[in-house]
Length: 98
Image (tube, rainbow, N blue to C red; front, top):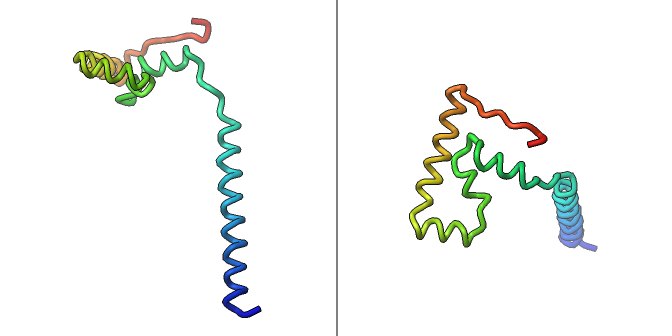
């Protein structure tokens, strides 16, 4: 076996090991994530400090209908208002039991 053949085999082995490592990390990350409950999603939608969180939870069809009707700006204004209240120290308290 020539040096170039040996290098090619080594490259394939290294590439295969790297690909398996990436797959293992990705699958481990997916298995450990706990699905978000509907209540948690609603709380995140209404009280997140990150802009656009409300809209990211909506289905594409709903987003399209809201954009078409012009109601999307109202939702964005609500989201902005909620984040401003939290930055001013006026927190809305929520509890696990509802």
